[in-house]
Length: 395
Image (cartoon, rainbow, N blue to C red; front, side, top):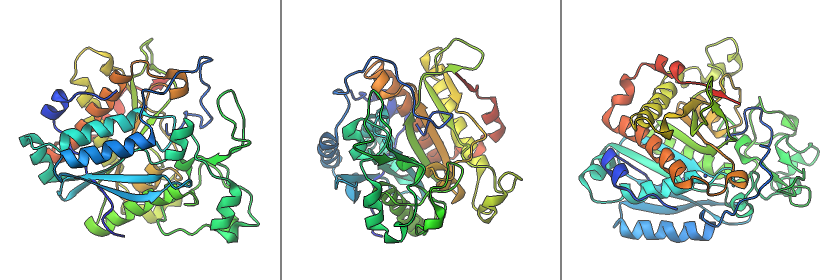
């Protein structure tokens, strides 16, 4: 695959001087989040058409420091972009909006791209040390519908993969109806359950309908595009050092307190292949690096704690002990990437623009913690055991 990427880089000076633009992997129990009864406007969040325009503007204003390409297309033929900044040997891949109702990550990525494409000394230094590939809004069809699942029917999957004609639809195929969405008449898939650690996997009927503790299938064009970008980076650089996935969750509390969580993070998506529980992933034991994922998460936590006594203190660990190889995070962690999950508080349909700027800023600060740590090398000196000292999330 040709180099379909664009990099995003950040440093403290850039972050502090930036002007923030105007939002889960899943709920912990993997069920659709139950939103509040009030429905909020999403007009303040960026649409796909606006994303396309904004990326072109950033590329132009960066004078070539940010390179934008079309990496692939959604099921409804909307562009899925990469924006690449930097030329360093360490590779950081960041994606947002794999769930279309989780929108702050896209705004944060656009802010970072604009800052890291500048000609400031800090931005230049970062670009020399790392290559950052941003994939904002990887599920644009879901974005336009402000929902979690993409816009794709099982019959379309069978058209693409005729060998599945005798198979039952995959477990992540949404056909329910509630107060917000009518998947029954407009079905779709949870794209973030369509990944497989075997990056060359071809769907087989015996692997359906499966369940959440088994790998996915790469049956959606959105997951295929992310997979292809990942494989392309591996081919070019030998490894994707860091993979970050930007999500939203419901509203939760810091364990043992009444403090509402601003952001939950995690580096735990599958059992360690060297453990008893992770025996089924033994073939990935030589590539999996759970300690590095922990170090990266600590770098996020520390960057936010450094803001002092503020809402940015309310950072927690997302529920641990997961086994989700069908997520991008689980699959790419098994392939050797240090993995970080961001779960911003509140789903768009139940949170709207409430405290939008603060939440976007929290994501930016956390991303800066990763980028600065990898750029300086400080992340490699973090004690992974500090990860277990981060407070847990509590319902």
